[in-house]
Image: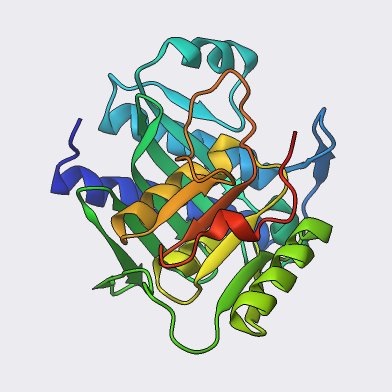
Length: 274
């Protein structure tokens, strides 16, 4: 399926509407934080953004089903039979939202036959929208005046390497990866960031590599994965194989996001998950 230009713009508008809903909660004096069954946090903003996105997508493409982080078990089971569907994280970076550091996003991706086709990542506090996919290119839209600019990965890195790491989830494996980068290329600049903005830093060429050597779910990555593909980069597991979606297990394996293929990045991963 190929999305039309008008649909791309509407998709960005849906993400922005969800972002406005999130900000209405974010800017309030207080908000309640609940705990899901897996211990992860949930706020009123997560649920509100979910409702806005699901309603918007139902109008945009009523024939395409939706799976969201806030979907019920029925949709989670039914998705396994779907060839084409929307994969949504209404509020990626809930921990960053709770900390009020602004590093959270709205993620909407179209997935076809296990591959991300097109994605939108909107950062409400930054008022920045990253969009793209393979065959579409990639672009960033900033501000209320919607200044649009094409984005691309850095490609071959000259000088100091830039590694982006999670602000809330780093761990020993990432530290060992950074040590291996240092041995191969010299001490890198390390940038910390929350949510899928880390992947977007690779898409815009601001970072060379993002190693995610810890657990994530498919809805955390699909939208930004699409943007990186459109920007000329790649996302693979630590064996160098493309990251795929709509698996029986919604968890992603360890993965790497990069622009340049001059380095065999999987070689720098210290240990591989069993």
